[in-house]
Amino acid sequence: MTTTSAEGLGVPMEAAHAAPRSRPQAYMNPYLAGIGLGLVLLASFVLVGRGLGASGAFNSVIAWGVHAVAPEHAKSNEFMAGYLGDGSQSPLKSWLLFEVIGVFAGAMFSGLLAGRAKVMTEKGPRVSVRTRLAMAFAGGVLMAFGAAFARGCTSGQALTGGALLNLGSWAFMMMVFAGAYAVANFLRWEWR
Amino acid sequence: MMAPFFKYGMFGDETSLVVAFLIGIGFGFFLERAGFGSARKLVSQFYLNDLAVFKVMFTAIVTAMLGVTYLGWIGWLDLSLVYLVPTYLMPQIVGGLILGVGFVVGGYCPGTSVAATATGRIDGLVYVVGIFAGMFAFAEMYPLVKGFYLSGAGVAMTIPGTFDVPYGVVVFAVVLMAVGGFYGAGLLEKKFATAAGE
Amino acid sequence: MRNRMSTLTLNQKLALAAVLLGAIALFAAPYPGSRVTLDAKELALAVAKEADHVEAPELAAWIIESRADYRLIDLRSEAEYAQYHIPTAVNVPMGNLTDAGLGRQETLVLYSDGGIHSAQAWMLLKAQGYKGVYMLKGGLEEWKDRVVFPVLADNPTSEQRSGDERLRSVSTFFGGQPRSASAVSAGGGGMPGMAMPTAPALPKVTAPPSPAGGAKPGPAKKKEGC
Image (tube, each protein chain N blue to C red):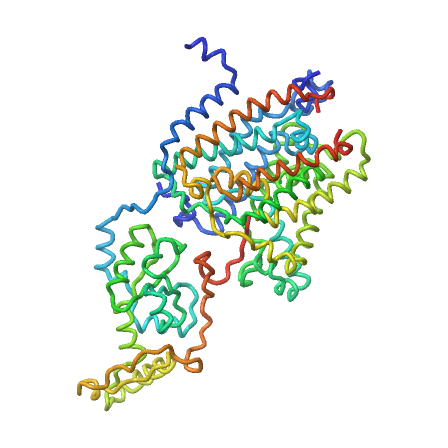
């Protein structure tokens, strides 16, 4: 079987002949999805003069949360203080945070529409759910450090900076692929 | 036409938050459409049997890149007003490597983890919690890493500007590289196709 | 040719379109550069309506009130700025004006020694689309003359007295002192050399923190990253 099989398109075998809405739909042609994504990114440039992002929103929430519980500690922490500003505005009033909430909504909408929304754990066949979830947590922690140093993640740096021919963003992007390919073989047990 | 509209004062901060939400919806919609709410599909990129990540990412980059190039060229978009994240080369290189590792370990990146959570993936939710934990840890450790964090030029740098190559030449080169990459991706996918079509 | 085109798959058509657009883009120059278009009528009107400047006493009042909704820009050289500058002013020498990262929606008050450089800078910034630019009328000369070393009548009337008191306190606030009218008309009483007021004399104003390297303006704005 090749990747053109129904399984490869994300559609369970028995769903291949069923009515679309009640069964998971095949994914969109990646090039068309890419064009859609690119147009959204372009709209962001034209409307607001900035690109997309994700990791920064997490920082704002952390700054707000720590400030709510221990304000002095938050203000004295140089990294968090940057997201608190002079205190005149809540860190939750962040363009990125609203955008990320939109990402949540948009993805949910698309998933429900395509019948792909399902409470489940994505994992390879050889690994247990518990182990997979532990790895997911670890991945998130690593991601946070990576995004913090790089001033962004794949959406803010790779997509946005890529389109704007930003030097640091392209370097970042290449390193992401390099790092991922470097460890893929060692993590085969998790996914294959 | 005076774009970016926000930078020319056509709407205020409050409206821009609404715009952010709407743009986010578009972003999340296409991420899920492409299948990026699924960790298995995402990591398939790194096992070479499904290179959708590369295809979607670079198609998006080429689309937006051509868009800003043309709009800037005809004067409809003032490209100098579009925010360019400053370049901190070493932290971005190291950050990229860490992110790449985290991608295969966790199965998502921050944006896709939100999309995954929105479509019910428990591992996506746990990943998001991991990001919060990691960001908090980073903030607490900030004094230790500050030196490295701030190393680098700290100014916005573009590839055409840094290497003194005409902007259009770089644009064309990126397009060629992407289209060539798409062709190569097709070949790789055929070669590494797995039995289960993962 | 038509047959050939129709046998191409969607993906191949997209690839072709991309390469075509990329090839045309070879000649693109998307960054606007430093060429501007001037709306002469609009600018002339702004000058005629006197919507282009701020008077020295007005500015003095803003500083005393610790207003943070504008930025004061000193257009002179670094050396001149170091020797004396109006408190809360940020130094942006003329040459760096376009690179300074000033916001197009910000309220900016420009000053130089007299009025020439600030008028030129005003014109340049307005032409580039900055909406809130104003000159300090009379520049530093008028600042010294009306704010720091105001001329007070020797025998003020009762009405003049309260006004004089205000001028006196403003002048002291900025580390100066009033001059007497008779001394000035006698040909003497020239303004003392302007040295940067020493620390105790310097007014304690909460200046908007000057941004590092001309980045995001105004009071410490919270960063958002990406």
